[in-house]
Amino acid sequence: MTTLLLLILILGLLIFVHELGHYIFAKKTGVHVYEFALGMGPQIFSYKRKKEKNDPTIYSIRLFPIGGFCAMAGEVSEDDDKIKKSEFMCNKSKLERFIVLIAGVSFNFILAIILLFLQSLIWGHYEQQSIIGYVPEDLPIAEAGIEVGDKVIRLNGYKIDTWDKLNVVLNLKNKSNVYDFKIEKKDGTIKNYKITPKLEKDEEGNEVIKFGLGAEDTKYTGFFSAIKYAFTKFWSIISNMTLIIGSIFTGKLQLSNLTGPVGMYTVVGETAKYGLQNLIYLTAYLSVNLGFINAIPFPAFDGGRILFILIEAVTKKKVDTKIEGIIHTVGFVLLMILMVYITVQDIWKLF
Image 1 (cartoon, rainbow, N blue to C red):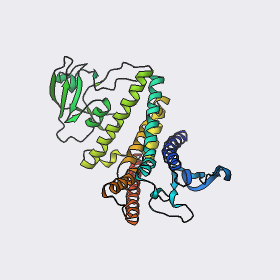
Image 2: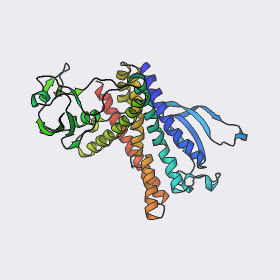
Image 3: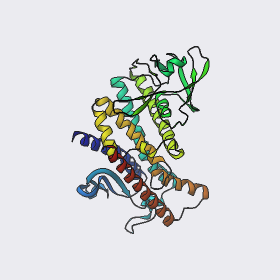
Image 4: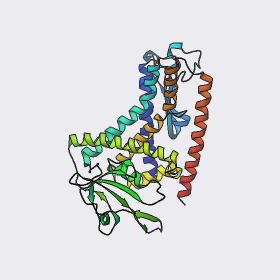
C-alpha cells in the first residue's frame, strides 16, 4: 500500500506540473480552458471560482489517480459555438500555440532540475565524468591495463562523457561481445582497447557480464556544486533517453527494456528501500522522462502538435483540421496498444 501511495503521489506531481504549464500559458494567451483535472474517469470533486473572478474553468479531481488534463477550447479546430473565436487555441498565433504546447515539457524539465539541485545540496553527489575510480583485479579492465584515473571517452563508437552514458552503451546489444574502449590516460595520451567481458551467473542463475570498473567515491558538496550537478545530470539524462529511444528503433535495445505503470510500481518500491534521496532522484528522472516523451514529434504528443505548427510555418497554410484530428487519433490508439503491450510484459516479469 505504501508503494502504491508513493507511485500515485509521484505520478500526480509530475502530471500536475505538466498540465500546470499548459494551463498557465493558456490563460496568459487568452485560450478558454474548460477544465483543469487531476486523475481520469468520473469527477469526485469539482470547484469553480465565483462569477466575479471571470474564470470559466472547472477545477476537478477524478476517480482514477492516473493521468490528468487541461481541456482547452479548439485544440485542433473550433468546437464550441458558445466560445469567442479569439479564445480558441486553433485561432491563436503560431508562437502562442507553440508556447502553450511546449510549456508542459518545460515545466517537467524545470521540476527535474530543481529536484536534482535539492538532492545534491542536501546529500552531495559523486563524480559524473567517466573517470575510472576503481579497477578490481582479475577482471577484464584491469587485465587490459586500464588504470584508476583513466577516462573513458568513447565506447563502441559512441562518445562517452558521463557514467550514465557509459552504463547505457554497455547494455546495448553487442553480437561479437567485444567492446572497443577509447581511453584517455592520466598523462593525456589516447589508447584503444578491445575488451571481452567475463560472463558469470548471479544467485538467480541469470548470466551477467563483468568488466571491472567503477566511479570514484569522492563526494562533492556545496551550493554551486549542486547547481553544476543539477544541469550536468539533467543533460546526461536527456542524452541517454535520446540514445535509448534511438536504440529501440535500431534494434539495439528491445521493447522489453521499456516499462509502464506496473513496472514503475516495482521500481518505486525498490527505490523507496534506499531512502528519500533515491526517491527524489527517481522523481526527477521520471519528470525528465515525461517531458522528453511528450516532446517527441509523434501524433497525440505535445511534440506531434508542435510538428503541425512547424508544417504550417513552412507551408504558410494550416493542415486540414479533420486530417490532423484523424492523425492524432491514430497516434493515440497506437500509444494505447503499446501501453497494453508494455503492461502485459511488466505483469509477466512479476511471475
